[in-house]
Image 1: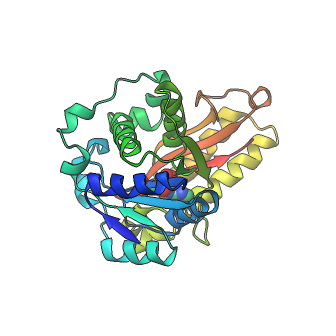
Image 2 (image 1 turned 180 degrees about the horizontal axis):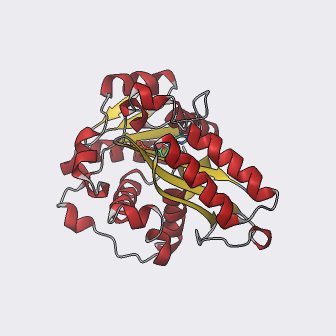
Image 3 (image 1 turned 90 degrees about the vertical axis):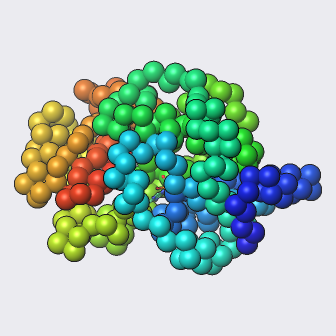
Length: 283
Ligand code: AMP
């Protein structure tokens, strides 16, 4: 596996590969890699010749400075996992490489309306602006044929899809389903920060979402069912930021499941000082 820390070196190598006619898949990550990330790498390898993984903890998308400081960092293990999956390139730049001319120079002027304002956008102001900024910048560097993202960050991938459209970027977004622990907890870099006591409760998110899905599909009242699930989570010790049933395309709240083509449940909840998110497709 080639490891590049410099933008120019990475570009040079990839340009050479492109000149040889090779296709590129790109998997952007923030490191502390786990099997969720590896599913993205494995998928990337099935659709292109060269797989590039980036590890970059982007400061501009952290609305909470404590979250940035506490973000797990496991570079040696990350490299071992990527080599094990035969990833071709690791791009691991530092902040000054990514934002060569300062962060402000890479601010994006793209308005995606309510997509960036609701759910995560409401609770993490500035997060999506920073996320779009870094994804756009990394795409500019890597210029891949395919961009691979996880369904776990459902709003993120919906926004990136809309951003690609709005900016007319020449890349195809592909999504990979959520990888879960055996007990149902969605794998996340932040899971290592869950206390032992809370680790037993954490999978209840998936259990409760699954029960809620059944209720909704059997015709139960949406508001009542959502309220019941929120109460269950609260009683277990979760601090629920949001639990919403939304249209899978535009993320608007759904009040009648019958008339929509796709419906997804999205949740963000705190367990102690760890913020967990999850997603379940209902329809
Ligand atoms: P992160 O390092 O958390 O920024 O995630 C990098 C990419 O991996 C994003 O596209 C995530 O959606 C994806 N990802 C993270 N966890 C999972 C998971 N459990 N299953 C599938 N994809 C995931």
